Image 1 (cartoon, rainbow, N blue to C red):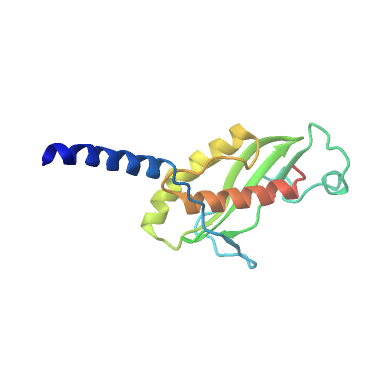
Image 2 (cartoon, rainbow, N blue to C red; image 1 turned 90 degrees about the vertical axis):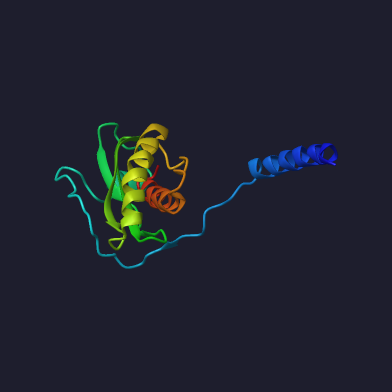
Length: 159
């Protein structure tokens, strides 16, 4: 009887592996906070960087390659708290990505995920020179919030 069962077990296992391998999930929809959220951690903006787009960026004219501009994206609720991403660009090149506003309510689990995932997301954004980056496995909410805020900052900078 076990010789008849073995092929069925192997076939069932293969079907299950194929089903798991082809499963694709999508992140939950995130809401953008309308009021500034209190921050638990913050970094000062450098004095020589503007936090708003220059007149050239908003008027649609070309930006000089040496123009350094900074923009903070919208504050995003990512299910464990709120975060905002700041981007500094020189011309059309991203020179710095940071998270000046992060409030995870003191949740130690969220803090450990954030401390692991945000440096990876920052590095990916710098390498991609856009918000078209991969999510960090195990930190999909943080990743989705980071990407959404990053994209809003880049859009405001005209990139």
